[in-house]
Image 1 (cartoon, helix red, strand yellow):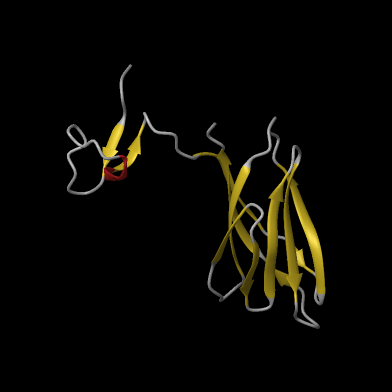
Image 2 (tube, one colour):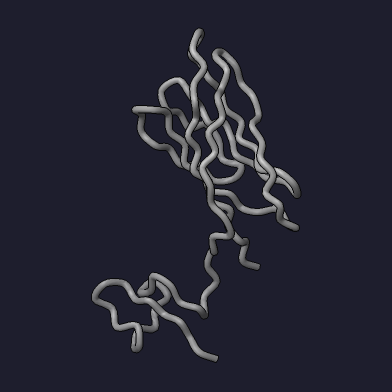
Length: 127
């Protein structure tokens, strides 16, 4: 079987034997991106709610998400982690089941609805 290897800068991928010397090596399990998209729900002022999207897979995926609010820094979250804040928006958790990816978001602004910009990645779970 043919191997596919990409070594880190300065590493000879043909002779390297340490798994940490590779950006990618087909012999080692890695997360593979199944799908990615941008989801931009409007989060109602002074509220906490679930925002869900269907993933269309036959298994429960691992999801990695990055969220920001206009003009604010990006925060990162993986499935079932909690509490990341960007200004008035809080991404409380990201979860997935057999049908949906769920983003639980709080908007602490008392009078303004906010748009959450969420870039998410659905990753294959290596077994």
